Image (cartoon, rainbow, N blue to C red; front, side):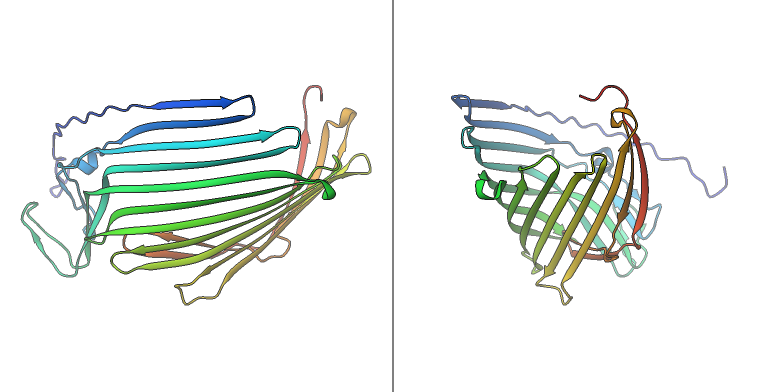
Length: 332
């Protein structure tokens, strides 16, 4: 041991968390094809030892961490209701649902920035200018509400199936933005449309489109509004008895109404061509080309307590892959 080394400090945390976690699930069927279900569950969020340890971790003087022995255990109530109905004769299926989640004593992360050296008497420590102290506090109750619907029907004149689904979620989240406690509300509606073929087992296709709008606002003034659209098209075919092919095209676009930036769009095209051989076609060899358009960009947006993070990324050029597959056993 060197002269500047020290034995690790010994600390004892004597705290017991108790919680009753009841749950209930009920399902009632109206005949064989119609049903309604209701469930209620609870869960607890126990603070980790590091969150409770009232010692200052200054191993990295610019990123200080301390715990809070007074943290309370988080407690979550969750309710789900869903109704489903099916018509086998007409091949029509639909469902609606609602869920609600409330978490009491939510644990938030508090970050305090020191622009100059500050003496912390409780730890007998003076901070380095530019250091950030991370600590933990109970910030109150968080609420999540969501509802959805889905409807799936045959489209006989196209010999296809069509589907529509939608959802809406609302979140109210207490948190810290730096060292200031705030509340953030978020609204997120979405809509999906799909069309899928069912006229042949030799040629299949599926087209889907998914749109999401996000509105998020914090009491400290941060605002995020964005619209995301994803279109997906997949075509697969078997031909010439042993040949097969697959084409996958995805178009993605994201536009932020609160950022001074261009609309982000991404076209991705992958294609596969293969052949089956050997007895009972147990073996197959395929060639797949990824990102044929060489235009694979991505964008992600995340809302944090003290900031909104927008990340633009550009992946490398496309690549190719040869695949050999052998199926053991008897094909049925």
